[in-house]
Image (cartoon, rainbow, N blue to C red; front, side, top):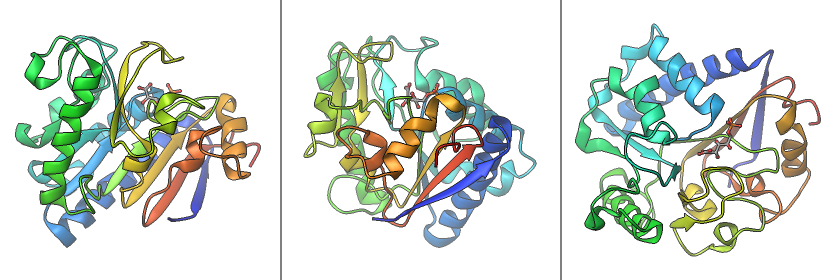
Length: 254
Ligand SMILES: O=C(O)C(O)[C@@H](O)[C@H](O)[C@H](O)COP(=O)(O)O
């Protein structure tokens, strides 16, 4: 597991822009090394802001988007196209503007999807996504049923949640599972599907992008040795690199 590298920017916009430029560089490098590149997207304010920065970047075409596999780290279990869905927000911010191969874009199931695609039941949706990941692991490499994602992006909450893994919740205790259903989530909407921390840790690189004073305490606790049960962010480490891209307010207590 890698140690945490921290990069502090003046403000949220600069952090989002830096994350976007780094993502373009990392995906192009992964393609040079392995042909296919893979990224796990996140919801949240800065997670979507950085996708807008990728869309606006002059270096956008440095990546062969037809050879990028797109996944989500978590999803809100609401109907397809609902504005609360992370995939709907990502499509609007960036994905619709890219020449992606639709067969390489892997959203988690919507609540109104057909049953065999994981609709109606978040546990079923989690199982379907676990199968998506295990077939992707064959193409992308990785140990067992989870791909070695090139970059997994994450935001965090004021209490240290990442993905939809909340402190002392069933998801943080589900160490053996790769993908789980989340119910009664403290952050609305209440029903979600999420990668577990152990699945996320298969990523080569994990980048946390966070801004604002509301995140400062959680970041300090994660860096100060809190357990992942208390502060899930503490358990989010990539195999090769863990990078925190922050603004000054978020970094204030480090
Ligand atoms: O679906 C979601 O809500 C998430 O993926 C979640 O983990 C998010 O990244 C953080 O809660 C940070 O969100 P903000 O940037 O909006 O604070």
